[in-house]
Amino acid sequence: MEPSASNPRSLTEQFRKHWQSSTDDNNLTLHGFRRYKTTHLLNLRFLEGEIAELDHTIYQAGLNLGLSLSSKDRLGLEYSRRDSKVPNIDETITREFVLHLRDLIRQYDEALASFNNVMAMETFSLLDDEKQCSRRDDLTLHEMYKTRLVRADLGPRSRQDPFQRRIHKLLRSFRYWRLLRRSQNDGEDPGLSITGHGWSHQNTIFVAEVVGRFIIAAITGILLVAPLAILSHEARREIQLLTVSIFIVIFSVLVAVMLKASNLEIMVVSAAYAAVLSVFVSNGPGSVV
Image 1 (cartoon, rainbow, N blue to C red):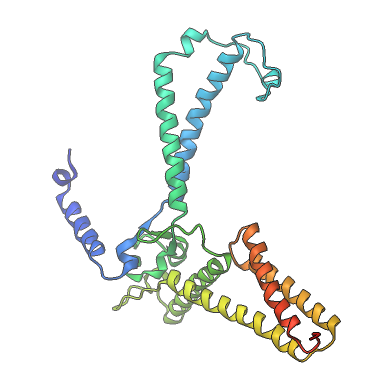
Image 2 (image 1 turned 135 degrees about the horizontal axis):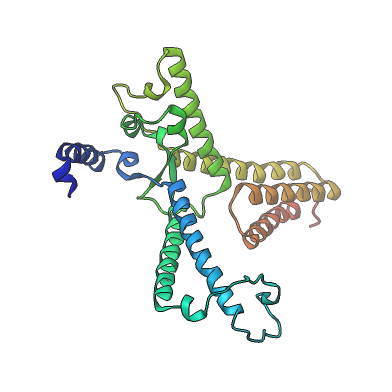
């Protein structure tokens, strides 16, 4: 029986709620969807368990063939455990068995790929969007803070810097602490303290990106100006080389820790920074003309 025929009022209420979310002006409400991480993982575990049973049947059938092993035995079949009672191959490896295996493998591969794509998407906390929070009366304030939504309108976060992720996490924690403290001061239920008259939206993804870029730019400027200031007043070659070496190490460590760069990118950036400092040394007061 169709849902509309069994419970038309429930479907009407769902349509009303979904229509408001699908026509909202704020991007958090408009493009924010739950990712159901635990449910995805549970589905993968169920599929993994079913395939494991078929995989065990396949291996036992293969070992029961009595064929000689390959010279390298890369799978280690010589040390595989053999069941005492193995059914006849004609009874286990059937057409139905193969079709069932193909269907499970297809579902498993698609679920793995989908889960990987979902986990690579930009996320934000449900608390960042008070309008969606007001519709979740089944969650406490802490559960809302822990609930992650994905931004369907943004690209993957595969190149997001660890420093930016840390800022994003701090912004979420600060918002949770502020709402929790407000609810405690007002003496209200923490889960109901955000259902006020006006809706608040905090785009922590954008804020973290702007703050991260500003801090990185400031640190880069300091690491360029500071050695220039030191080298311009220092004529001793030993002190100049020591200064350059220290700043190169500091710069390389900061790039490796704060930015998501490959080993080659770290080497190239560090070499470019070292080249800039070498120009400072060559043009310093201790250089020979």
